[in-house]
Image (cartoon, rainbow, N blue to C red; front, top):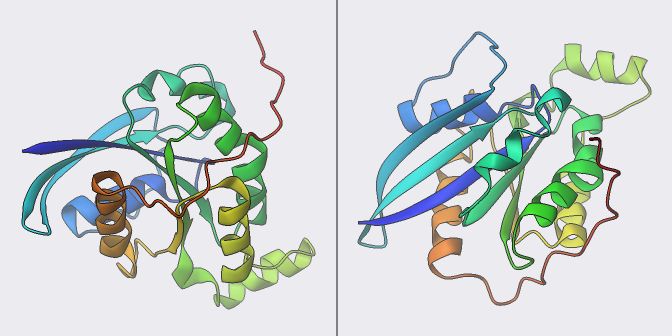
Length: 197
């Protein structure tokens, strides 16, 4: 059985763990417990081939910046997540996450940009909160442009709460590893951030 290692990165609270639990158990957890590090696995059939998908959940909080890259070796694809209702997490894709991935991985590493919490884009309470900060939800067009800018092979939106797009995300990710898209440009080197010692 072919094994594939996928690592999920992104700011704390964007829904990385919920996404993995939703995919592997078809349930949605209601409590938020910040992740330090966790592993999930799923055995799936893709195009008639059995695949064991190893899913590595990482901590998004800054205090784990030195620990998190220990999970990166032998990664075949990164799922770089942001919440569509958190413009700050969207900005951090380019400012933090893609540079970190490229610093610790081969330059031709596959990256899928993932917009989480798609079901909340029209949530009136969240729209009011964002408006109070003079912000709006991230649009699909903005995310697709960012995916092109950072050299991601695809942008996929999903909702762990409703399951919308969840299976599509992981099916696409597996297929991208098995047959890497040739049309995707290599990820561009983003400006390096100063390393804290």
